[in-house]
Length: 145
Image 1 (cartoon, rainbow, N blue to C red):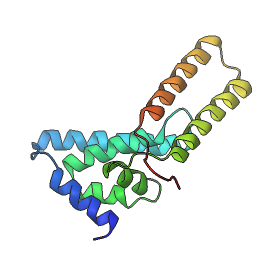
Image 2 (image 1 turned 90 degrees about the vertical axis):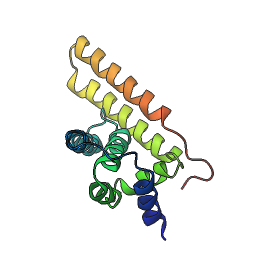
Image 3 (image 1 turned 180 degrees about the horizontal axis):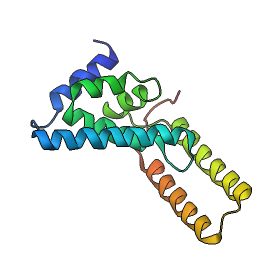
């Protein structure tokens, strides 16, 4: 099997006990919302993409094998999810790029928009929170590509 199909097979086999229909629906809704926030995070530096995509993968792996498989085939998400589910973690480069985009966007927004101090403080807290989430993601061991 290839790496992707092995990962799908592993997720299918390690999926916890079957979930009830209401829980399955709730997991799918949370997964879709998380994926939507992850996609928005590609364009908005305050939303970290990777944690939301990983949350969507976790929800879909419990609720829908078909949706999880679809998520693994997305060009912007598949490799990150596959690496994370295999226990490989997130590459240093991915973390660095996410942090660079986050703080560059924050700086540009703070300078260009000149928001009131309260809004600026809120945005700074969100950026610090996003930074903590990104930094705490497990690191990929070995060479980074």
